[in-house]
Image (cartoon, rainbow, N blue to C red):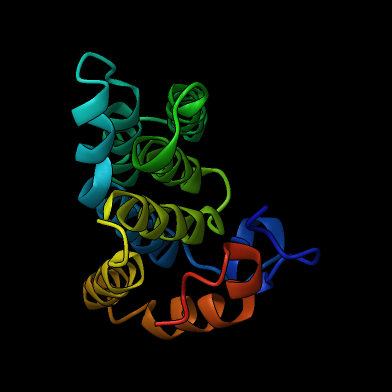
Length: 171
């Protein structure tokens, strides 16, 4: 579970009574796509013929461009998470990262799930004893990709939901 019991209104769109603008929602979606794309190769190395995680990343980018609707992006995200079902380790977490990214069109708070699962994927792929360092590098990389307009929001969200996200943001 990556969600806090009470939704953060800063991650709820204005249309739904929150304070998140469409512009910032799109920035969060693109950042989540970047996080997922950074690790999707870990899935593809194990499941080279399964296009679902990559498709979820493509769908969220298409949603940002206005080429697909929210429901299609969310469905692609669900299919990516389905691709993880019978897997373990890095491949499973990479598929979940892509799935979470695809679902950002529906609920912006999924952006943190994409980042958290990407860190878990990198940790799972690291050699024994190097997991924490690999996670640190991934977290640093993700933070370097944050768009300035949403940087403080994401960093604060990481701080607030870190316990729900397996403490992967202790970096």
